Length: 105
Image (cartoon, rainbow, N blue to C red; front, side, top):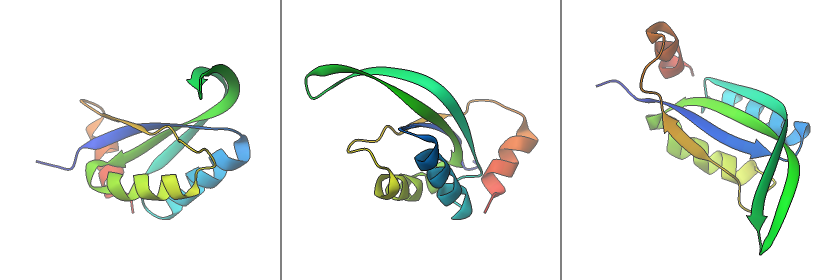
């Protein structure tokens, strides 16, 4: 069975940190591609308070084999005390694209 492709979500507090993370993950071969979606608003409970912030969302394309290293690097670079990192397996897709994700170095 081939290496599963994952779509990982991560929020960042600002464009600069989002760009730095995207460049590091792709540049180090931990992700094939990172899309940055600016202008999202997140509402969440943090340390007993409800908070709403502007953030950028990263959509990170990687594989199951790369995930542990990606997670370690993201946690080392991310400015948040508790960064969001959620990985969702890709059940189906354009096979040529999925093979590109698997083969990206």
